[in-house]
Image (cartoon, rainbow, N blue to C red; front, side, top):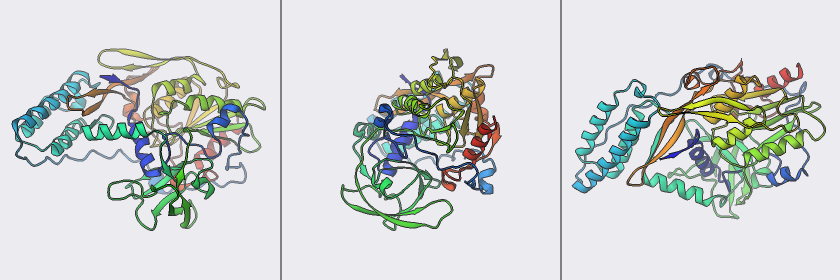
Length: 464
């Protein structure tokens, strides 16, 4: 059993996004600066594209403004039986026992969220004993875990575990256009989260929030789910792109290898001392050092009057990264991760960079803020350090633990939940992070210059 921070699923998300975007690493979320330059302090801080008094915030459609409930988990389709040998069934039952016992002994909710786990186990055991192909069996194990109604815990087959390991081992070895995309439901389009500096995408003028509609006039992914932006180095690809408020247009780029870590994006609001930092993830361990460097760069001419931390697309990640980010703005025990066996404090060691411990903070959140993205946002408010603006988050702050099963399959199980100071354990799992000021947005429907939440955050900081 391996304990991990919420949410290891952010790792899976990054791997998926890289497959869509053809980036060279799970490591580049900067519009205009390379991480090496951050550390050297040689690159000037760019001005944000939003300009107070000149930029006009975009209006979100009604379906964005109205709060939407989480999509219910589908009713599992039980597989057909198959003729298999007794050794196959015995192995499957051993895996089943490992999964069932992990949930029974370690799932954070001792009442199994109102489900009858014993009856669920008996039902699925009977299905396995009737004979299943391995493909059907692994689908069944995912379905059994989904019976808990838990959108955080999940099961990986041996093939999925191996594919994940291969993707991680490849590290920075990608060839593509140099832009990181996030799929837009139902998944036939995708929006840019970030663009590598000096990449084909950057040279073509692509920006965060741009939408990929088609690749070479067809789908953005092939039948195997692999991005069609992927291809040999030096090959040409035509992208159909739409920027919010404009008509679609085509651009042609030449694929090449793009290298670099996963830099954060930051900028200063023109003619102000208000800074902005965008966090797409807390998975990359370099994020904390880059944030320190960003604060040094933005305060080189004096302290900031305010700082906006954008977690709207932050899928969570590593506890060490989240704790380091929190340490730039607060300190001390900020809550507890509570499991059946323990109550572990989230104890933050503070450090001040350019007045970061006292600067006025606003944090932006929305439906895509997940896990440690939610915890960091909520903790900064509970600590009295930040106001929160945006849309409600879905509530996904459990701590996952990894359980490796005998056949190489794996269970990521919600084994602890977060208890904010002065509040009940798991409260944010029930409510999500509810902003102080509601202004829901959708990433692909505005640009940096027309960002409604950014505009409101700047307005409130300028008024302080």
